[in-house]
Length: 592
Image (tube, rainbow, N blue to C red; front, side, top):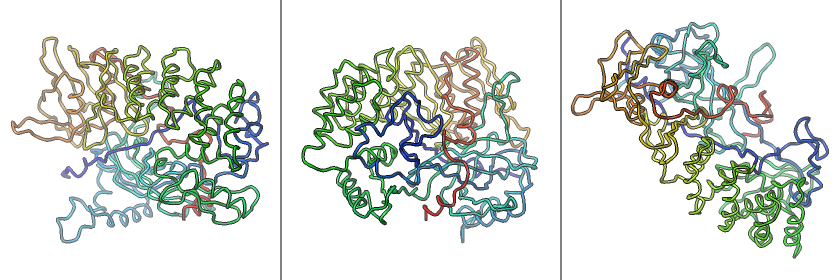
């Protein structure tokens, strides 16, 4: 059957990437258990009860808990195309019928009065170029519409699909499912969609590999897209109309805007609406809400800020909580916070500077920079991340750009991620393959480094100067679909691409020694320029990552290769620590 460019369409993958390491969210603030009950292994026994801290006394946190902060498991079935003859026609009847119904509702298949699609849904499912897959993902807590998350993709058991490598997932809906007796499931509300190119672990093919790769399983990095806002409620441990009014008033006063942040719905619950400035950082917002003080008597906030300054000097104090409590008080606490920027205790200096920076104090950048530049500081990586949030600080940007030249590659990567969050001019980003991933060229005088993400938004970062291929070079990918060759005296690379759909091979194609240009050549969709030269081999992200890894390993590229640190579980079915896997009917109801 003739292949069409229709199979090569790949959607841009965006992500949200978040995690504070040893920062403000070291503890789980959102547990429903009473204050005197702690989950085993949750907090070290040496840490005093947080309820004893003035950072939590008289706050919203004492009045209840947040509901709706667990990850929500969604599932669905979809079609992966672009597999050559590695797919299969097998598909359970119920799944097939549901897929056909959904596909005919989509514009590419249901167009009226226009040119018909190259294949009908029925023909698509029956083509060996495609495979029906099961898709699973977890919608982050408090996620807004358009939030992206990774989804795992698995070929259906009992089918003859041999590999999903190089495939692309058609847009499909993801639902909440409720398991019922007898092994069945009832499909719930559509909460997200998923689409994009399949990433398969490219490093588990060797016999001595620690992690074995399964070509029938993969992940679409950032391929899930939230459609329905996750609802968050604050639930009072003791229902009280007066307390609901007090808490609602306090939240709305602190986060004033065009729309109400908090709305009391009953004597026991308050709906929480995310302010626009916190859409990309919902947990920081919810942590701030928990640390808001309820007393409004004159002088209370000033006295509490001073008392917290005394408490934070203790090495056993809950330092992140105190920083959040200051931030909740607001800029009136700045004089007290600023007085600790030169405190003798490192933890007091760091968390005071952190709170000051988040309240907009430009002076706080200097003590944070001192921690970032201290090789023995335990707050170094957290400090780098916080400097990335200081978008208006020239000094923060200068410090981060200097760290791109650091001797520790992970410090350089942390600085790169922070600068990327700031959209810093030192990073030049180029989309590859219809925006299926990005290549970031990063100015640096340090050793050449290639950094590859394997979760969230797919990106390849080239840190250094003139990252190039060094002949002689000979590379052939494990599937025999790409050969790269260059003799000692070659002036350019020679590429030969074998079609994944047939035994046909391309003529020898020239390519630049420049690695950024090589990535573009490998990943872009095929096209001819005005001179008749072909550009673009339509290779997938994971195959290109394997090429870069092998060429770096054999010193055929003058750079070190670094892969984003992530667990296998994060790569294939992201389940954050402590997140609930099973379906909870109450969560579905909370979304309606």
